Amino acid sequence: MTMDEILYKVGEAAESFAIKFARFINETIREIAKPTPSQKPPTFKLLKKLIKRQLTTHEFLSLKLQLSFVTYLVLSLVIVLLFGSEIYLGVLFACYFLYLRHLILKNRDFFIEVEPYRFFYYGLTLIAFLSFLGYLVIRRFAKNVYYFYGYLVAIFGIVLIFRHLYKSKFTRDWTYGVVEEVKGELVKVDVHDDIRANVKPGKYWVESAEKVEVGDIVKVLVEERVFRSSIPKRILEVHKAKPSSSNTSTEPKAESESNNNK
Image (cartoon, rainbow, N blue to C red; front, side):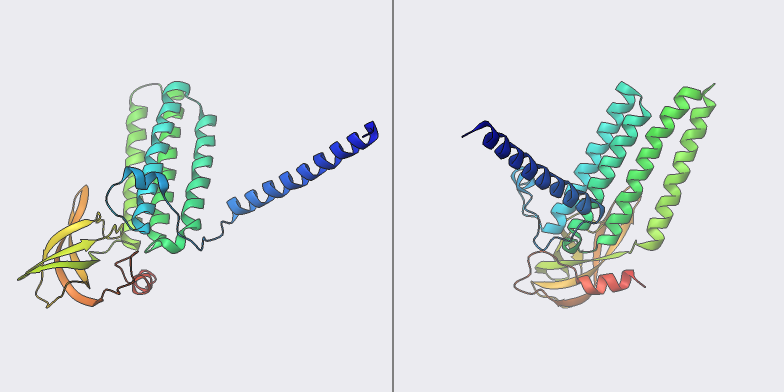
């Protein structure tokens, strides 16, 4: 093979690589800007190794959101303490927000209800960023301790406003569960993660005046507790029998979404 042929082959390879790389970058940017909803549920290989109990896709997504947010808080704190850089903090916020947005929109069809989770985590992420950023700014320009007091009051006010907006838009005092055991007027109900009712996933014994059977989906009243998750207390109504093929959700999604839009 002559030198001309070798150079020609190298040129062809470089051109092919450049075209594929440009296509990859273009598709990546397009996917980040407008995530395409996935048709298949995510696998959660790592989480399934760490979590021994069986969770639904919705619960795994909720858990992933919680862990990613905690990771973001820890990294933000590290940046504030070690670097004190607004630029680093802003870059981290932008990267995490894009990741959060992609995670939610890519898997939106696998949440029982996606809007409450999107509103909640978008809001928390923004408040956390403003909190860390505000601390860095105040630390540089504060002349006395009262600047920090004012900063804390402002952050507390923002949190209260966000809490009010979230509660007025999404919060409800009931959730859905699946009947697992019946003992007289006491019923063991398996409840999924429900951010709107502030209920953690688990099995709860609740009161019931209704006649229920194992496998029924029931609407359960929850008792709100300050600064803690709510507790299911009493069955309000039997919604319908649990479909035998259902393994992802206990909540009738269509009805829940229609209630949210009212």
